[in-house]
Image 1 (cartoon, helix red, strand yellow):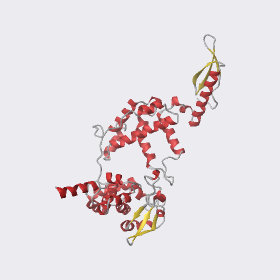
Image 2 (tube, helix red, strand yellow):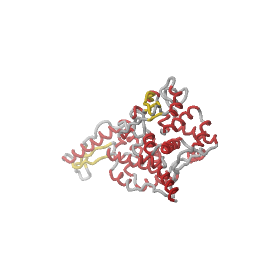
Image 3 (tube, helix red, strand yellow):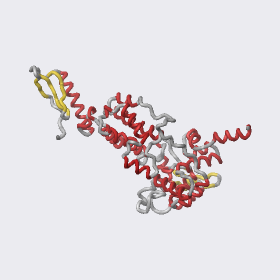
Image 4 (tube, helix red, strand yellow):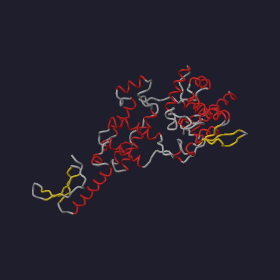
Length: 394
């Protein structure tokens, strides 16, 4: 059936008792307007025509609020993200938040996609929560594939809560765009997130810094490019994605001179291409002698990125952080040391700086706006102070 391209018409209808009524059709569904010729019937027609125009602007008949499915809502949300340029860095590249939304909404689409958005309830939301906690939203083939790859089919408690909150945010956006009744969003807000200590959830252990000994044994087992990235990361405390995406033009080799030593300065995207850029924070990374030694060979030659994805991609892309992470894991296993990941290099750098200098120097090196985050996740200042007190006071 072809989609109507003209607004709903004002139609005369005679009832069983001979009374004249007005009616119209909205995408094939009859709509009663009341007594034929009455002012009220014309007001209702105008309201229905406004609904028709709004639905057509959004993509057609399926975008009438009463008929919007969860799949329609998600598609509309991503159109909104694209059209409004949301979750983009200053250079126009997408942040990881876009991918996080897609990962978060995947279980919802699989389990509830064809259902009407206005019928999504707290009970269905709890069922979805249980499915992502036990991995049942994945197909048997996907579950088996993840097990063979040594990966868990279950999201951890923290990841589960983050992704469920994104689902609620999409319904909240749907309310703001008048696609979903406000009652649906309010009802979803009553569902508790997974609490700490829940027997149903996987609680991932907090990873500490990798030891100097394990680093020394792992580095020779890495490829040249991954070894250079790891050494720059260890010397600076940068995040894995920040090192992998370094651009040659963003490294200022004139930098500054501190205590008679030349210090290079790296500004990702002029200071705007990093995790906290959306908070208005500009980032500058100091590159000392160790980082300079590891980075210098990669600043020569053609190409945009210091660490390209490969010969075929030279100048077109950089080594992906996940590829780097897999390479580190493979190298650690080849070296016969416990598994570790690049994030632990960042923590090792923070701990080393805090050992030699102080917590505030570690905060500055890692790019944290306050020392609270550094202290909570990376440095060990409290433990050191407690140990000193124990040594002195018994």
